[in-house]
Image (tube, rainbow, N blue to C red; front, side, top):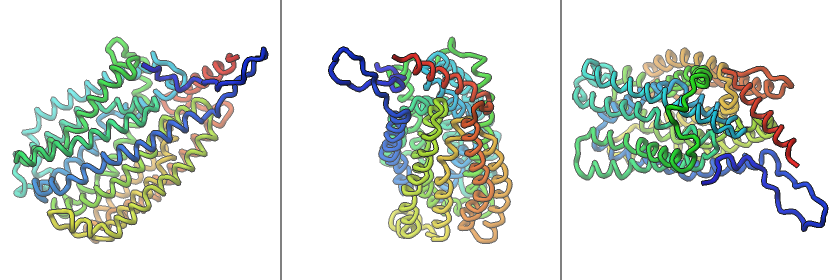
Length: 494
């Protein structure tokens, strides 16, 4: 099996014939290998994960016909709740990816295994405890009242949908850590293929359930099973064959490393909570103001528009680990150059489909869905504008994430959630669901965007300083150690 750190080594090109005088081998540009890995990750993200993200959208007609508008709206509201509960991993997934980047740069496999093992131990315990609480208290919670479907959806079916979605979500908390490990070790292409396979696996599962005529809640179960199976199989492959040196083990759990990971993860935890609230509040606001049928009218076009946001995320997420590697090596010019290119690429990738959604979205819904929807062009235009704004600045956020600089994002998101929740509630009552994305776009531009720009500049200034200050959770110290080791290694080469 190839060494996962072999990409860090410099391979000297073949030189001229030996004439008795040793000719020093020329090294490639510092960021050349990193750029190639990034390009490969972006390409596979667009091809593999793009197809995988399209699969749930293609299944919307089957799901709508099997569930009906009310139960489908309930399902989307529960999924919104799981999106808000994305903080259940305590920010350790994001913190792990940030901490592993300098380990990858320096080749410190022992330290990396300590971080990986500690993260798995903590999140497995969290998932077990939360699953036990969920199943113990599920029969005591008035789910129909919570989701405003009393008299519309049977209480037993409501509880079944909630248990299926929340249990799948909790089980996937530790399983999804393998994706963070792959990204940190710049195996983005492989990770994207596995995630795409998980999404595509839902298609035959849902079709089989529909063909067998199983109960409607079985559709929800089938749609939830694909990602779980993919992450489980991916974990077996990564820790069994691809990178056995990082295989989690109880003996490798390190309390000292765990404390540093939890401190940094705590910051990401708050950002994840706020991000989940900001992106998933819409369905809950609509269901409590206009009812579950209006959630369906909003959630279906929003899910199509979400593909634009997911596409931008796929394009920019590989930057997280690549930026961590570049910061550890002091390669700030590569970061600045790459961020500019990724912002341009994000816009080029999302503008054409956004225009297509606005121009032809209503015709698509009319010809495609079994349940008629109001193809409101204002709603479609607002959704496209919202995801274009978010996508345009994702690359800047990835630089801050790689450095563990989290506070600017946190401040901006706190302001956004506080203002947007009130503004959207009143906007829905006054103007309907079409007002939601426009309100979100305006508030985001006034709160999160300025904070993100400040955080990006602060991060680069910190690492551009001769004696940089320590970022959150001592991450700069770890990066500085990695960078020092790399510089010493280079000086020792003949």
